[in-house]
Each structure stands twice: as structure tokens, then as C-alpha cells.
Image (cartoon, rainbow, N blue to C red):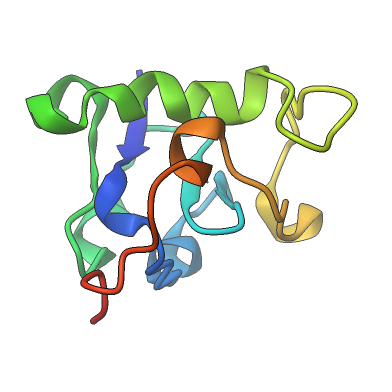
Length: 117
């Protein structure tokens, strides 16, 4: 089990959650952040730091955002557009840096100008 970042993060990426994550398991796509499901230690430090309330425990994701549970896993364990291999188990976002691409679900979403702080 792990925390999940859902749709409200798209086109926001405030990144305050990244600053408080003790294991650096939050990775940056092009338009959204993703929590690595196998690196997350379920501490919950990220959740209260999200200004758009996009972070929840995976069993508590709102029904209209449930597709993001699988999508967060897909970010790491599916081959993303323009890449030759899956990201897999990375071991920390701090040293990895921005991935610069999103899953097809996020990439296909229209820009969200209403998702502004």
C-alpha cells in the first residue's frame, strides 16, 4: 500500500510534498507528480502539504480519482511514451531528477488552467 497523487495535481506540481518526503519517493513527470508505490513508507508526511489535496492513501482515493491508483504504478512499471524501458525501482527522486514525461492518462488530459493556486 502507498499514498497516491491524483488528478488535482495535474498542471500544478506545487512540489511541497517532495520537500517533506523523508525517502524522496515522489517523482516529477511533465505535468504531474507521482509517488513510487514500492518506495513509499506510508508515513503520510506528504498528504497535509499538498495545497490542492491531491494526495491520499490508496484505499481512500475518491471514486472519481480511482484511475490514478493504477496510473501512479504505471508511471514506474510501464514503458512511458518516448522511453525505451520502464523506470522500475529507482531508489530516490532527489538524485534522479525530473522524468519529463507523463503516463498516457495524464498526457491525454486537456490543460487545466483552473488548477492554479
